[in-house]
Length: 336
Length: 205
Image (cartoon, rainbow over all chains, first blue to last red; front, top):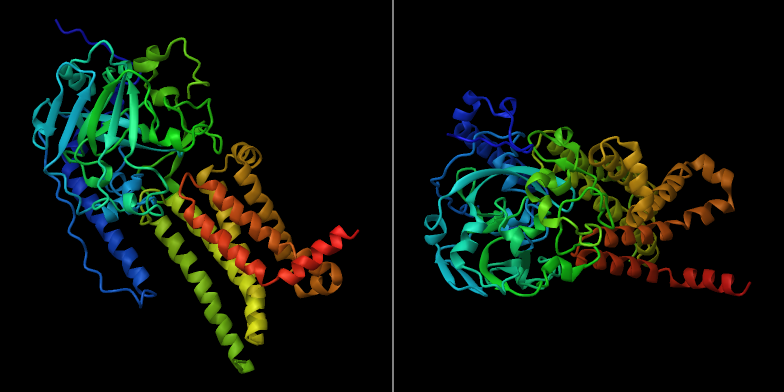
C-alpha cells in the first residue's frame, strides 16, 4: 500500500509545469543560455565605445559543467528562476562583492581534485574526493526557494543528497552538538581572499554552522548541481550546503571541511556584525534586519525590471511545517 | 596656466556634457527594461544611479577649486548643469527605490524612510538637493539675493550626507565608501578658509 502524505509546501497539480514545457526544458534552458550569453556580449559592446584604454580582452573559457544522473523533481509550485540569473547573480565574496563578479572571476576555478573532510566528534571520519561527491549518495533534484538576507529570492532546482545521510554515515558521537562548515581557503584561486577590497573585508575562510538537529532535518541538502548539471564555481562548486529555511548566507559554498563539535561555533557574518546576522538566521518576516525590512522580498524570475515581483516573506521561508518543531520553545526574536 | 576657451565653443561643450550625462542613463534603462542587466536589474539601477549622483555631485564641487587654481573660468558655466544632473540621477535613484524596490507600496516606502537611518539620511540629502535644484533658476536666484548663497552652501552638507548614506548602506565592503569619504575631505580642504570662517563666526557669537 502506498501511503501518500502531503504538506502545505508541496506542489499542487495546477502548479506543475505543463508537460510540453517540461519536455522542452533543456531546449528552453539552452535558449536562455544563449540569451544570457548574448546579453553579456551586448553589454560589453556598449562599454567598448568608451573603453578606449582597455586591453584587448580575450573571453575566458567557461568552467565546464558535467551532466548529472539524478532523480528528477516533479514540477515546481513556483516559476523557476532562469539558469542564467542563478549563475549570474551571486553573493560569493571570495570572488568579489559585486553580484556579477563571481561569475566573471571564478571560471578558471579548479574543483578536481577536491577533498571534503568530515571530522571531529564522529566515530567514522570520512574523506570524500571529487568523484565521491557524486557517487557516494543517490542524487536527487530538489526545487527550493532561496531567500537572501538582502530581501531578494530565487527558486532553484538543486541536485544533491540529504545532509542527514552524510551525518548518519559519519556516526556522530554523543558529544556532537553542532556542525562547522568551512569553505576552501585558497587566495591563489580566490581573488576576494587576496584583496580586502574585492573580498568585502571578511576574514577568510568563510565558516558556517548548524545545530545537529537542523543538520538532520530532511530538507538540509548537500548540493552538487543545479539545472541538471554540476555546480558552476559561482554557485559553490563542487559541493555546497542548502538550508532553504534560513537566509542564503547560511548555505555555505565550496566546502572542504565539516567538523562535528560540542559548542556553538563562531560563524563568519555573525562575527562581522552580530546585531545584524544571528547564528540561526531563520527566515523570519517578523524580525527585521536592523537596516531593512524582512517582511517582503523581491522574487527574481524572468523579464526585465518590471517583472520583479515583491511578495510577502513567509516564516521559515515557507518550510515551517517541516522545520518549526526544531525551534519550539525558542524565542526567535532573541535567537534570530 | 589660463586656458582660454572661445565663447562660441561653450554651447558645443555643453552638448557634450549633456550626452556624457544622459548616455549612461539611457543605456542603463534600456538594459534594465530588456532584461540585460544581470540577475537583479533593480539592485543594478539603484546602485548605478546612486553612485552616479554622488560622482556628479563631487564633480560639481571640484569645479570652483579647479577654476580658481588654474584660472579656468569657463568651467563655472558648467557647474549648474552638472549639479542639476546630480539631482536628476538622485531623483532616478529615489524613484527606482519607490517604483522597483518597494513597488509603489507607499506604506512600506514611508516606513523604510523613517525606520532605516541610512535611508533617512539619504532622503534628507535628496530633499535638500531638491531645494537647491528648484532655486537654481536664475530668476529665483536674483529674487533670493544673499539668502541664495546661504542656501546653496548646503551642498557641502548634502555631499556629506550622501557619503554617510553610502557608507551606511553596504554590508561589509566599506573600502569604496571610505575612498569617497577621502575625496569629500579633499574637496573640503580646498575650502578650508571659507569653512574656518563659518566656524569662527558661529563660535564668536
